Length: 375
Image (cartoon, rainbow, N blue to C red; front, side, top):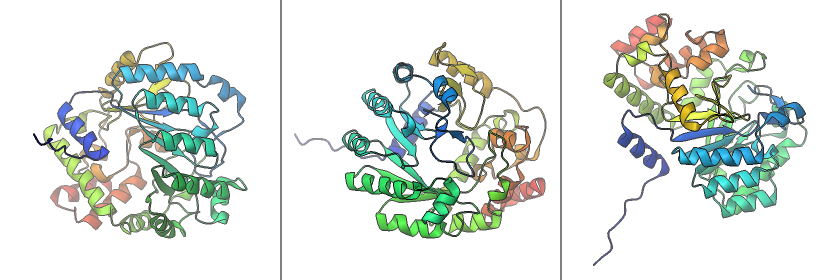
């Protein structure tokens, strides 16, 4: 008998298939773990910005044993995907042990790093135990720009060295940048640079306000410039259309949810965040944490997040009637960081959404109502 053929799926397709089978059930499929808030760089835009040598913070972080125990509990609770982020994850001297254990527990792992602290030993580990992807952020294509953003001499050369090490070891790699005033003149060239390396590249320019109080709004690109930069990427239009279609489909299935509940994203529905101290929250941008996983269970924490998702809006505002929310990056966390109130319009995000809609030709009868409401 001839062997049966097996359909090949990308990991994205696998994820979509799993979500489709789950329907509307709340299941903790994906977790982002912040191994540390500390970083060896001092980026002008960063929303965390905790220094690498802060011994008080380091002492508060979960120990190796606590993280390993938590990884075991996350796996048993059904988590499938894990993203390790910071701060800078490679500041943890036990990173190799944590990574290896997470792989052994079967997590599909993504790593977010600045790449400046890579060693041959770490690259060898990742080449042996492949992650889904390592994403390195380029804070500039030239040394001058990179070090003006990061405030650390020599960081540019160490970052590019890390990129080369991953490429030589054939570790799955993706590059990204932050499109903002200090980097605006190099973003398009970064796309070409990544293409020449044969790796995927993306940019993000919707900067959130910081947790530590620094106002970074002067670093944001004007909405018109950012949207023009977005659509210079051939993938932008189909990706945004996909987001718009998915949002409209969700609204059609449950129209009242998007006007009654504060949280309508994936946080607490399929995903959640664990901070460096064992605190559990909907996402990395919603702080402080709402549940302590050191003294509690993943299952109980997941129920607490479910209760949080039942929080209803307390007032009427334009975003509740917005038919372009699928291509808008405003969320309660963004609103809170911007205005100290999770139920407010973020004018910057709104302007970008309207420009995206015009570029995509989405200004239909429903979108026209939005333009009036968001003006």
